[in-house]
Every structure is written in structure tokens, then in C-alpha cells.
Length: 118
Image (tube, rainbow, N blue to C red):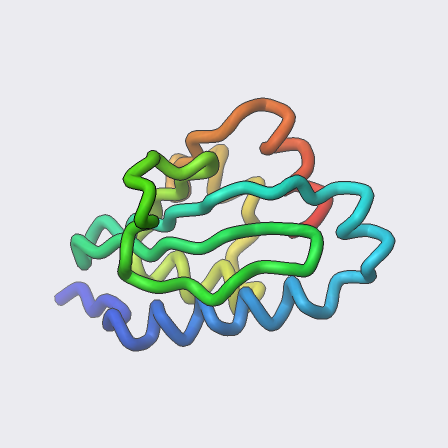
């Protein structure tokens, strides 16, 4: 039987990710961060979390889509267990991408910048 993480565990993992971004050196953020909207679709739970990346860090994720109705600049798709493992450092992002466990829909430039920050 497959046990998946709950919506609450995913919400907590994304909260931890926000805290991890807060720990990134301001100079590194200034160098690599451009303002982007982010969505994280947790496919096995059929839920989407929305956030915003900017020079000051990463805003807390919510389940409310942006008021402007625009699609996110950076879209992640992942299953709940992998999201928790990724944030906890138990799953390597590059391996997860290569193995098809994480899908990221973003511009090439955004992918390069994110790679430097994660």
C-alpha cells in the first residue's frame, strides 16, 4: 500500500522551503533572484500551492491563485512524498528532474538561476 504525505505535510514542507530561502545570503539572492510567481502542483493530492520569489526571499505559499489570474512563471509538478523528501534534503533535485520525479516548467534562464539557489 502506497502511503503519501498529506496536504498539511506538504504545506509544512513548503513553509520549510520558505525558511531555507530566508537563509540564503542577500548578495546571492541579489545576484540570482528575479521576481517570479511560482506554482507547485502536488499531483497525487490534486492541490496547487502558489508563491512568489523576489529579492527579499520567497513568500509563504498559499492555495489561493494569484488575483491577476496569470499563470505562474515557474511551475513545479511533484508527488507529495517527493516534495517532502526534496525539502528535507533526502531527494536530490537534479536526480529527481532527470528521473522524471519532478517536472519544472520555466524558462531556461529561470532554471539556471533556481539551480544556483536550491
